[in-house]
Structures are given as C-alpha cells and as structure tokens.
Image (cartoon, rainbow, N blue to C red; front, side):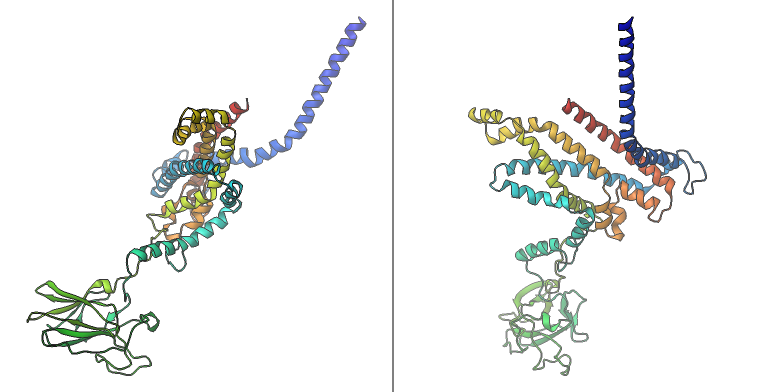
Length: 443
C-alpha cells in the first residue's frame, strides 16, 4: 500500500513538473506567437478578406478583383516581367555563383576576392538603385556605362567632324539640318566656290583650324573653301571669306556629275579643297551627311526595350556575392579524395566539374536557386528607384504594381490586396520546398 502511494505521489510530481514545463514553454513562445500573428497571420487574413471587396471596402464583390487582375494590361505586363525575373535572375546568379566559387579556390587572394564580391550585400537596395540609376544615364558625360560604350564605339568609328554645323541661309547651299548639303548651281572646272557654315561653337573648332583661304583651282579643276561664316566679336560680310574667319578642316566634299560621284576630297586645315583633273562639264558639289551626323550617345539602358534587363543587371551586382559564398561553403564540404581519385584516373578539370563537383553540389545549388526565386518574386526597391517615370509601367513587377494600385495613386486596395494574395500564392510553394529541404538535410 505504501509503495502504491509513493508511486502515485511520484507520478503526480512528474505531471506537475511537466505542466510547469509546458507553462514555461508557453511563456517563452507566446511573444513570438503574438508577433507572428500580428505581423504575418493577421495581415494575410486581412488581405484575403479585403481582396473580396471593392476599392472603397464597403461593397462585397467576390472574385471580381481577381478577374480584373488578369484582364488589366498593366497587371499582365507586371506578371510577364515577374516571370522574366524568375526565369533569368536566379539562373544567372546560381551560374555566376558556381563559377566564381570554383575560381576562387584557384586564386591566391581568395579571401580578399570573396570580400570584394560580397561587399555589395552590405549596400542597401536604395543606395544600389541610386548608383545604377546614375550609371545607366544615357548622357556619356554622366553615365559611366555609356561613357565606356561610347569610348569603345569611337575607337573603331570616327565621330562626325561637325554635328552642329548648318549651312548659312541664302548662300547657295541646299539641304536641311544634318545634311547632306549640295550646291544649288552647277559648278564648272576653273571655278572657285565658297561654302559658308554656322552653328559651330569656337571651342568645338579643331585645334589645327587655320584662317580660311580661297585658292585658284586652275582651268581643269574645281576649288573652294568650307569655312565658318562667323567672325569672333562680329563684323564681316555674310557669304564672303573674312580674314578673321576660320576654315573647317576635315570636311568631306564630293563632286557629283549625272548622279555619280566623280571625285572626293577632304578640306585642308584652312578649309580649302581642290578637285583636279576633272572632265569639262557641269558638277554639283555635295557635303555628305556623315560630316554632320549626331555623335553616338550609347545605349538607352533605361528605355522601354532595356529597362528590365538593366535592373536585373543591378540585382546581379548585389546578390552575386551571396550566391558565391553559399556555394563556396558547399564546395568546401566536398570530399577531396573523390576529386583526387578522379584526377588520378585521368579525368580533366572539365569532366571533374561536370560529373563530380556539380552533382555533389546539387543540394546547395537547389537551395540557392529556390532562395533567389523567392527573393526575386518580392523585388521592389530596385525597380522603383532605377526605372524612370515614363517607363515605370514597362518595368513594373508584381510588388511594384501592387504598391501602385494600392497606395501610389490607384487607391484601389481591393485590387491591391488581390495582387498581394497572388504574390503570396506564388511564393508559398517555393518556401515550402525550401523548408522541407532544410528539414531533410537536418535529419
């Protein structure tokens, strides 16, 4: 009997101890549960409910917001852009991270290299967006990317000599701004022609330009001068070469007869030119449009055609270090004996990479890829900051579209809530996949 009472007392003590442990666990877990409920569960439930009402929130509309969402061209464009992000960005980032993780194992300063690549992760999306907004400016004097593009372009193709020049009116030249310009009257050998231009700033004149000079061509040649018909400080007569006026060197001039170019020459430092050995007859002098072509200004990165790829490029700059570090950690855990055995068997580095390294890294690559998919579905900051106002709609993704519809002028929180529910439904499967993978790897 005494033993039975002792056993019951011991059991009661154990039960009381377990109840105390449960209560203690609840005390510790309750703040987290309250926070989770306030920041996650309640907003999700509220958004689902709000998506069933109209813009004012007073009238129940059922699935009307979801129907409108898939019939609105702007929303469909946002869905298309989000699809591009999901397909392109995670694939490129995972590939870049893998390549850099493998390469960093073969360089001396691997730690410094990883640090430099990971540094953008310390930069906020706001700061990164501002940096790339400036870098993508089309003006080469402001945008560093177009400065490089224009520099490379001009290294292989000479820019036009006088892009702002235009012919002086009523001086015998026909043609509009940007050329070509032709003489209105026929020119015969033995004659001299003066071709006056304006619109060239003094600081834009070539350094070797000399005072304009007219030279006698001879009986079987046509001569002339292409000059800036403007004297610094004013003065001089229009259509006549004055001593203070300079020639326009490097200007291409063509002699045309019966629609065919008979001769081509380039003006000298004083703007003079001469066509020698011409047959007798009437010629038209032409200054091709290549003399006046607008200088190449690079690529319009923030235009409708390139704005989404440009923003994805900024995203790659920020997140490449993250992918490299995670994949590098997985690479460090690969058994080295498997790699050495493959090398001893005569496998090349390419074969080792394809058939050993990548298969062993498959779990890490999958986690990195899925994590990036979740991240790009929620991207907002870079799109909002980098895309200029006129092309904002072309760059919108689901997150920016949701904000614009709800708070950015649309004032339709019913449709905005429907967009948020759609975004949640797209993100949840990827999150579940990642959680299950983490649990399996932990087991």
